[in-house]
Image (tube, rainbow, N blue to C red):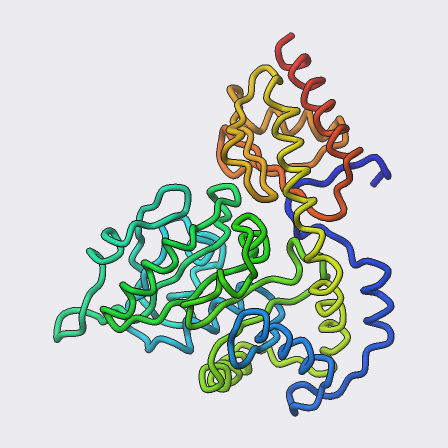
Length: 346
């Protein structure tokens, strides 16, 4: 891959920084399964503090963090509510059924934001014939809506509804720090009112591996047992946790620049023929490009120009910014789109 190549497929493609590599090489470690890896403990303590929770658990992936939460909160045969295009439903391999054994009931949304009335209509109460709805899942930011943010007022409304119906709330906060930056609040304000939160270190935060699950002490103690069942208990995992600590300290402050560059790219693409950009929808690190021709045709031509991206649908290209995408790369991407537009129109 050449130095001029720009990889916008996801914010998961980031490489560990030199500071992360040094921290990993020098990490003090123990055996986390036996409970004595000090670097993992430091990462878990800091993650719990940031989210305003009592405890946290280090996981290999965001999918495992979400599925451990489901299996910890729910009993097999119970029902969960989740947005109809959520990551838990779309991208986690059918795990709610296979691992937690729960029924999933989908809720429509506007740009990832569910209406409380739509949620309420789908709540079931346990009877001889019906499963109990016990968990509401929220995703903030929302992946398939292009990094859209759930407003704090909606988060509060979900909490009030959950209290009325005795539901727990799990927040899939894979990109919760992006949500906090967009909302201009501390990250614990986004997590507030949620019984558990998962967030990824390996997306916009740039660490090579890992996610955290946070929540009450008793919940995390139970979650640790579920993680073990899924094979997620790691040994000298402080080597990985060390990179996560660096990401929380050094990469989180860079997120506003990711959002600025996404906005900059959106503005640069508005004038490109054959595509449509909704500037108002570019509020975090995603740029969603609607194409007149099939997205696949654009992607082949863009790759020849040194730009990689992914198509979430037949006529949509997703561009994801992160801290290793520079202003020069944004300019290169815009130039590539203009070049491809000429090629495809000829």
